[in-house]
Length: 218
Image: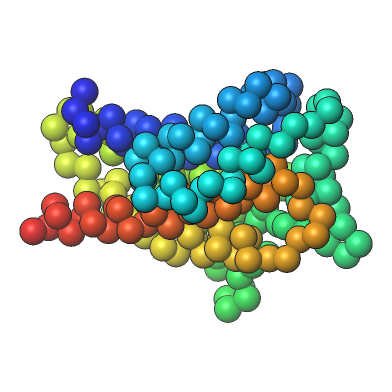
């Protein structure tokens, strides 16, 4: 495996781990948090592909390593951060809640078109909207995995790189920037660190994929 394809595999796994972190918590995530594996593994993987983020992620390690007593406590932290609040949750897991310059229906149609262009049919379950953070992270995981596969098979990876560039710039980067910039006194430390880690990663990814596309065009 070449270094370029190895890097893409690592980047894909980071998107997958971030998606797992933002999903409703289960026993496996709790075990990884208690063992200190989740936070340190994610941060180490991010630094592996973006070493310039060492300083930015220094405080994230401690937040992601925050211990919780049990699964009920972790679920409570998740619900208090993303589901409940005096008027609304401190943070929303839906991109549309941060977009004010166009109708949400237009946003959903655009995201849906991205997914379907690559043969991905969004779930039709209630509340499984295409603009959830987990869905968007999983989409990037898929795109980067396809990039790695194309590189390894000596195929053209640029369609997947262009899709990453477009989706990051139009959706995931502004989504996480808005999320990270939202005041949240009730945000649990673990989830505060997860949001910051995700933001730093996708911002670095947007710059890196633009550089790769520029190099390919030269």
